[in-house]
Length: 372
Image (cartoon, rainbow, N blue to C red):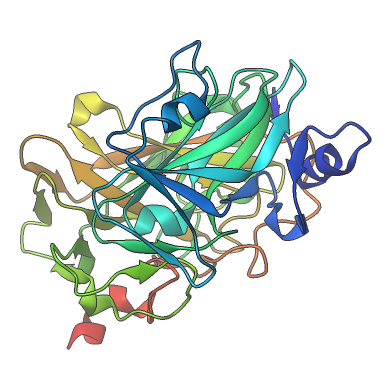
């Protein structure tokens, strides 16, 4: 199996028998090993989230909508805590050997907007059956604060895959020896004995040792976030900084949303991509990551810290410094992409953790001096 690379995705759009159909300019949507999926100009306000039955199209599901409305170019308000369905401006006509997998864009996850792709007659979120032909639809539910969404905005991204081949543990050991895929906060590759390579991936750990260990979303921010705007919002209007305590632990409360960081910096080599998966639920009833795709070239030369989008379920949960919290699985691409993750193709290219790109001072906010 392989994940299709930038140039292969391009050929699936421009070939004589396209597998991917997008109206208008599309080249800016193609990432190293994924394609951003723009929303159309229509939305439906739903009573509840759901997936279609095996005999049901999404259009039939939409007949149960409370109402529908048009997305305006300047941005349309989506209510907090309300499920909406937005048809995507992209259609698929995949051959039987290919299928699609989806993950929220990083900016969407860091704003606590819960998005999932649904397709006709398929009872799973964020994936298509092999050979899927049809339209794509996106469930959008803002959870911490309302947002504004415009036509053409990309809230999710898709990988086209064939099979399910991942790097083995031995291959990951070699990859680390060659590239130093896991690094410390100074950008130095970790010794092989200090990294956890198991189950075809690398386990990453939460960092509660810095002055600002993360953020908790305010319960009632005074405004919404327009997801199309960059460097536009003041962090203190939406976030409460979490400071390190003497125990290097923190108790997470049910129903609250947190941004934390990994102890490790990560580098994704040119020939592969990665997918961050939540850590084993047997270690705690919490979700540690919503936006999971890491494209080829992520991390640059010195690595980038991972940002964890955390919610716990049912009961308060204590996390401790160095606790394993997520699993980074590496997957092979069919070719080294023509373009790698960079300042031109990515929004999170510095070494430290970052708030969503919509916020001012999004890197500086992780330092104590910023809040004095």
